Length: 191
Image (cartoon, rainbow, N blue to C red):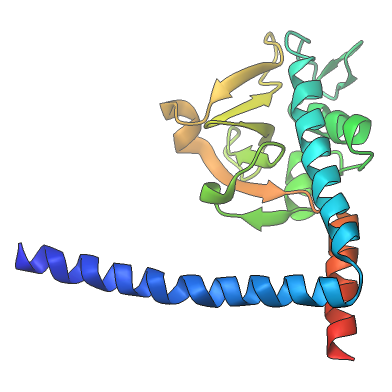
């Protein structure tokens, strides 16, 4: 019991110590945004990103049942995995991702699986090469994708043994607007 209490106490102390530092940075960012008159803009960008992410997932769900087609880019012709992801981002967010799954992985920000939010991209090794398959995370450990020939766009559980063994990583498509507001605030703060 004594050996258990010490590590738990240390973890608690580290968490308690780290939380104020993170809060201090957040408070400083809020102060900088307020000083520069950017609070309203930043909140609007946050809201816009949240709405677009929500719209993205809802739009993607609307394509359930569309057949897989290698090289497919449209609901009329069918989708392959990267064509589906590309079409959803272009149609909903207005962001044109590269065509192939590995290119999409390279063009997006790497995130930890624990950071996944609806609208993030999830990658899998389904063809004995990294980033050979991509889908859109919808929440609660599930993703939507166009899986393979003979199948249709569907939602699957990432925690299933097949997908767990093949998980290659998660990526986030960055919002240019949000980054511009943050960059402006930080450059103004350093003046």
